[in-house]
Image 1 (cartoon, rainbow, N blue to C red):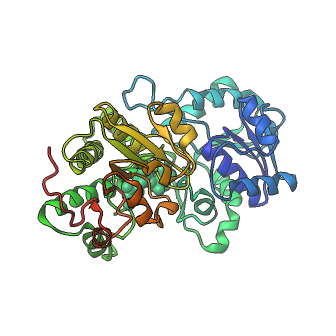
Image 2: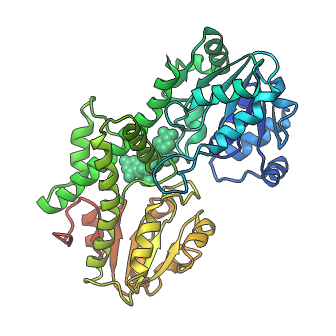
Image 3: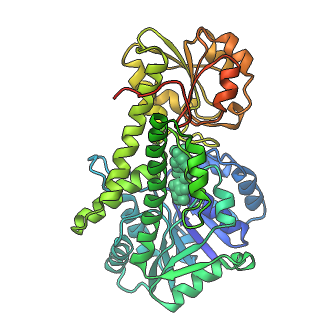
Length: 443
Ligand code: UDX
């Protein structure tokens, strides 16, 4: 199969590379000429485990190429994936900005030759694929094409594995021809018996939002239970385990923390609310999920303040982990972006470390002092706050940390450590939803 992927962001680059790994002939196209030039030199612009060698391997094999020209690739392609960004609109109203998707449709239209399937891989509001079809038909009335929706469910940091071994593949199609072509692309997954959900285009578009909103719901739910655990003296890990062993609930996504972040959950929950609003449907659970998430971040600030004895003014705080989760340098909607400014605004001095995201973080949090190791960050600090659970923070030299700190206060927003062990080491230890000494976090 010949595949063109428009957009070399996270989704486009991972999908294009993995399609090449399946054995297809893939051209990844982006209007950003500098990015394309760097990719041609073998420089992958994002940190994603396993991606760089896979790009190199498939480029060397001649299956993967990068171009800022649509020609000749779009005209030759059997299937074109639109994988451009759909950022939250600048109006801040929760709508997704679809201009890149529609630009891509306009660029594709005049170049179509034989029958082609144009697939939306970007997360787009319900109805977008149909709008893409309308644009292409308007721009090129003779085009022989179908549109389809094939949402992705890649987690950053695990994207290659998620692509190569997905829980399911969702195909929103309107013709047997389009279905056949898309199934052919994913044929290698038949070997591992991946389930295919073949449905209408609108249903496929909604599956993506519903899945992300449901996962976000699990997180907000367990965060509320964690807060309740703190007050009643229960242990949220045991609660999550006890709940999760019920197969109807499932154990995943019940880990409490500072609230979800990243490029998907915050944006997609808001976009789902907008879609519902436009159609006059109440989605009160999702509304609550968004509110609970914001409240959780605010609660973490109060927790840190309480651990510092009631005020952060003039205190040095060591922050470990800035990215919205481990194994990525992505700072989008990272809890650190809310928590750190809330502390520095009230006079705290923040010294931070992150294994990958410091460059990105420095653009957004210029007031922070960036350190080359977690230990350097802890030097002279009145408290250390673990915000992102990178593996290297799971095996910290705790006696060394304690000796570096001005006060032995450890606030663990990811519940990486065990409360009784931290207490035995002499820390004043705070975590989320496990028997901590501080009761009644103010507010
Ligand atoms: C998510 C979805 O998992 C993926 O299917 C979708 O396509 C894109 O969005 P991603 O944003 O990469 O992927 O991260 P994910 O690992 O799902 O975590 C999202 C956020 O939730 C992170 O901030 C993480 O720390 C938080 N989280 C996750 C929790 O707080 N608790 C959990 O139990 C799980």
